[in-house]
Amino acid sequence: MTRERLRGQAEEFAATLTHVLNATVTTGAHLTVFILDDTGHAIVAPSRTDPDTIDEVGWVPLSTAASEAEREAAPLGLKIRFRVGLDGEGDHLQVETSVFGLCVSRATGFCPIRVEYDRSKTSKQRAHVQVHGESAGLAYAFARAGQPLRPLHKLHLPVGGHRFRPTLEDFIEFLAQEHLIPEPKPGWQEVLRRSRSGWETHQVRAAVRRHPEAAAAQLRLQGYTVAPP
Amino acid sequence: MARGGRAAVDVVDVPTSVVLALIDEELAKAGVSRERFVALGRADELDDDRLRDLWLMLGPVLDER
Image 1 (cartoon, chains in turn orange, blue):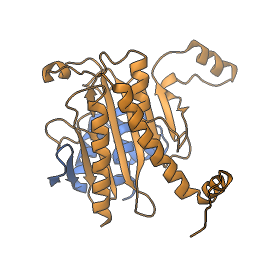
Image 2 (cartoon, helix red, strand yellow):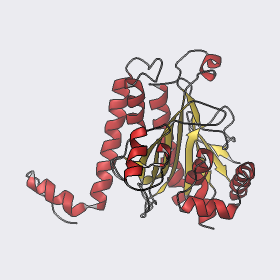
Image 3 (cartoon, chains in turn brown, orange):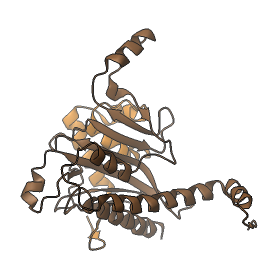
């Protein structure tokens, strides 16, 4: 039953992501759900024509060209991978880890910008951005702190924490605003707005499940009558 | 691997043996042992992006064994 629930909810999640991608930055993207045996985990990632290729670098070409050959030759791509599972109660899908990034090489999967999330991480930022690059200012800061220089990409820049981390929609919007998507599809902003709204509602409901007393208190402040179960 | 799912989404059941074979293949390419991979993954010290992805996505299959 739990396995079937995971399968169904992961499938729905993958369908939503597929729609967002194909309505904004690409055409013909296809996300696959890989159920990892009876571990309680599944991976949602792009696949090519053969969904058995779980080891393929998850690459979505940033191209809306009608021709598949043109899209395949796109110089930039989006890396997207999610590991999902059910929450502690076994009722709702939750993202356990995610990676998305702007990639410049399909062969190596190299992404100069990556957004990572790891729900179980405790020693570093659960949601963080990593950027490959050079920073003289950062080198100076490490020197002033009496520390050896750490490359920019080794820093985990915090972004929003567990509940309010950047979404795929935010990342696509960022790429479009910075002109890193050659030709976003007409109406892409509205697609992102609607999808983001759905995500925010999902997150608020999850927050309420975890903090029912705070939610009830706020609703009472707003004039609602709330009775405990 | 069994396959099913909606028209727009494929769903593939991946046996643990396939996941382990895939992990071993990637680790062999990188010249890293399973033990080292798990240690680096737990410590968040994996620099190679491919290995980071591998850990983030498939790490629990090793870590929970």
